[in-house]
Length: 450
View: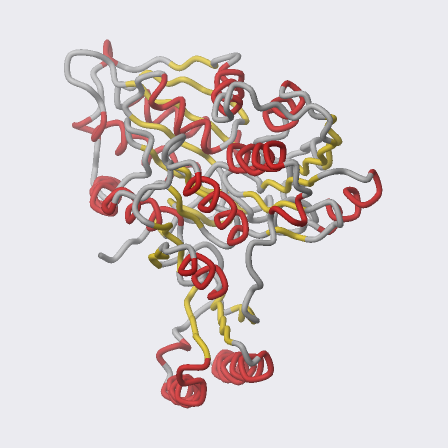
């Protein structure tokens, strides 16, 4: 399928630049409304957003599109992505929208779409939306008396907070724990600290004062340095770093060391296996997850299925094959017993609950395996297809031959940024480092010669 608007995680781009313009956002609202409106009653849509300045523009444009198609719109305001997915089901909406570019800088934005079941829309439905956008939808819009209404909903963030808290056993609380939470100046800046405090924790907050332009700026799951320092400074038991829309998390132990998504999945899988809760005989991860995780799971008699990068592909595989734990090294952890998408708050609560029950420090609990050396480098490419160039193909072929069975190579264009990601892993760190450098140099030569 060839997509003009949709990528691996909805529609994304620079604000006020195609495709993230008010015009496109309005057309998306019209097209989705036409596809999802109900027979016999007004269709219902919930719209959430993160804290980006451009969220106001896109939100209003989408409201215009949805109401023009006859949909009833509920505006949730700044709220995490997993809350939109949850409220889509809770409010019996026909469709859910999250306006966010996740971990990207403030000048980017995006549109993520959920069906009435809270799951992200399939490629087939996204393609139908694209085809409608490219047509004249005038005759499909609502009549004058069927135009939709929009209203801002207050308090639904508290539904999400209660939902997140109830994912812990009734007798598990966080009393006595000091926790630092970095909210990335994003969508979870209210929900995450409040949920932790209500569970009894002493909460220290970072990056919880969004301005519209500081989301993910030197903070959050992609920049956890400030969190590491703060955990050490206040002698906290744990640190939590969310991303801009709250669907991913990395954690920090009491020594200030990073705990990535692979280690978090290992903790949950091991605990759920012990408690008889793990389904599918293992977990689902992506091609970027560390070989050390795979080896750890194998020793437990568990499998690790790998998918393409993107939490939607993880979720699709989980649904098809009966798994209830999956995710990405970057911190998108999907626990399908509780939700339909990655949820940074729920994941961190599961880990903190394990720490509380086991009475182990985070440094012990969350170091389940020794990671295999892994090297990842990004090459910025604004145009062209350097991976199709003969020189680049030859270099990759030679590197793969040299690695043989002693390493693993993953090369892929980013679905959210103009980057090509080059990753290699293996037991010989020098070998994989040289392998990545050779491929990066080849890509840069082709790019610079263009």
